[in-house]
Length: 447
Image (cartoon, one colour):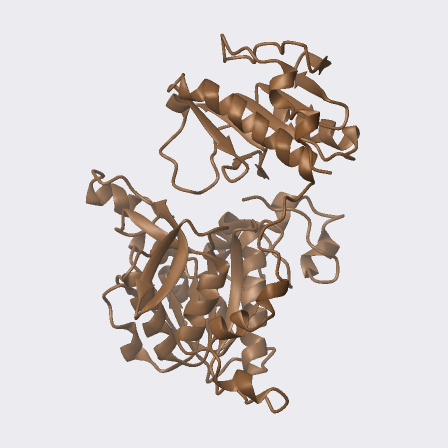
């Protein structure tokens, strides 16, 4: 993840930006705090400053308090260094902070002792087995950066116990799976998501514990889709769940979200009384399903046909060469802090870890993108340049409208007609294809 500029009105530090370099901003906590605090907060950087700001705003909104949080009880699960716990304790809240590792939590515990914060308690414990609810009830439970490190059944058990431990709200910050290629069941209900590898099965226990940003012990965790995460929170006793968009976290990827789950009785609707007893699934089923389009090729029939031709051409080559891996737009990769989802791409198998659903971190050897019928070539070239900057060897831009293929590499760009043979991509010796292999026949287009 990376930091970027923060909006002028939302970020008080913005006014410093013209006078102080970025690195200076990360080392400017309150002058009333000791040197240990300056060191800790500077090390955590502006990314965590944005996270703390968002959580402070949500807690204040729940409790209608802007400054003093005296009397507020907060549970911080998976607290890490305890940034949120310390912030809440400095504001007067009583905080119980729990983490399974001392490696990060020691810094927060020592700082709390130096600040003489008797209202924050740091406990080393595994949330999967420790009865944290016995310290409650709490007004707010912070469930930050933890849900996506759990696997069933602990995923459901910890979430439900955290929900039972609060009387008012739970704030969840979590990764979510962009799509669900697996289903798990709990209490008779199905939740979709994907499996994510945290550790190798043969890793030693001390190795697993040493990975401070991974699961404490689970070899694999289960990332819920956004819809399933919302469903789980509603099933756990929160009739209202809101997603926070402001204040912003500029570094946060699309696969991560912050949710505010609120306790309370769901008010009955007077104008549509049937919906009061209907489940979420029943509401969706009654929402004019006959008018829904279940699937629509996103960019027209010519593009759809060309995309199919590309996958067939590349797939035939890859099947004959097991040292290669073919991916489509659902197999995205990340480089230089940016995610890319080309229509098709080829990787060398030896350079990849086993695919677990998340973004690949290795650029492919070849990327192929198929244009809209009316796409501006300038925009496609900009995408090609971004692929090359990310480390891709060559880019083929398939243009159904002109029935040409534009080959872009570090040596420049060259256009090929349907009858022309394309040059071998770097690193794919022997791969021979014509531009026509990647273009749908005109007669196959729908009219």
